[in-house]
Length: 174
Ligand code: FES
Image (tube, rainbow, N blue to C red; front, side):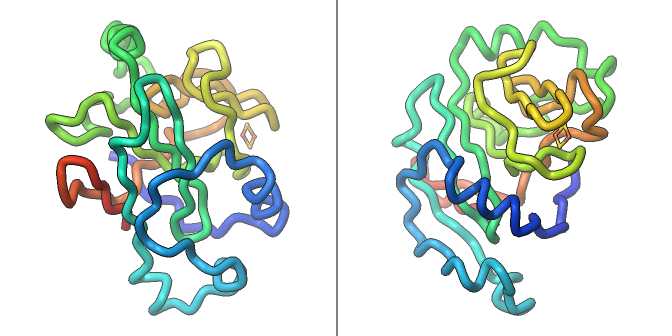
């Protein structure tokens, strides 16, 4: 199980997130005020959670939501993507972790990961790279559709944040 990266993104990353988020839909909770992201109070930070209606995420789509000032990718994997993941040998990966361990039972198609490269903190690009997962152009890290590092300098998989289904359609992150 990947651990949560608690390091706060740099100011540059915030700017990147502000201009680079591809889509943000269905966030039921209020978006964390931008000023608070820059200097969050510890107690407020501990409580911060985001609810997302994941029924709005179509197969093949990646949606980016903000949680505790970080981008979180929610990806609805297609049957074809799932088939490719099943064919991968998880034990051979740099950060060996099965795809099943990174998703919720009964919702295996849906992946939720923190969208911050584990190398130096850039935001990777979705549906890109040699494994059709994410590609971090900063130094060339390739992730698969499970957010696992397959190639490049990143030392670990994209972390899975704490989350749960509060209904069939709604996921609560945090
Ligand atoms: S920050 Fe992603 S590869 Fe360096």
